[in-house]
Amino acid sequence: MEEVKLKLRQAVEWPLRHPEAFTRLGIRPPRGVLLYGPPGCSKTMIAKALANESGLNFLAIKGPELLSKYVGESERAVREVFRKARAVAPSIVFFDEIDALAGERGSSSGSGGVGDRVLAQLLTEMDGIEQLRDVTVLAATNRPDMIDKYMIDQVKGQLAACVL
Ligand SMILES: Nc1ncnc2c1ncn2[C@@H]1O[C@H](COP(=O)(O)OP(=O)(O)O)[C@@H](O)[C@H]1O
Ligand SMILES: [Mg+2]
Image (cartoon, helix red, strand yellow):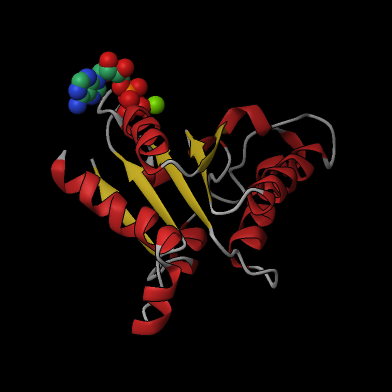
């Protein structure tokens, strides 16, 4: 796990702890990290370890928790998560089992495309006009093939993927 731990420190802890060094060197830190691997390979555990070790504010959300059958509620929940994260920055937002939220468009969970709307909100938060300052997004999935391609493309270059 040494390699994964080092990657997480570089991608999450360093930019939040030493932002001035990144500015000085002109390096843009990744906006998020996707942990992927089969069930039981310690994705959740390593995220918890990062929460403890980094000493940064840590908001953990289980993907399926945010899904609501009521129109607008799921998007509101996503907005609320990021609002809280900004308020307590520097912070880490951890979406466990993100495939429940960021699944391929059109094939979204539930009727009325709640998955699509949640995904759009998530993309807005991650890439929106309101810059995500001092907030790093960490996500875990055992189904990387189910994550929306557009989301992966959009954050490519800013997204450091860690294979567990
Ligand atoms: N590297 C490891 N060292 C010790 N125990 C581990 C390790 N990886 C996984 N485990 C055990 O497996 C359990 C499941 O890991 P978890 O992080 O929940 O997996 P995932 O989220 O990837 O499905 C953990 O609670 C832990 O008991
Ligand atoms: Mg898990």
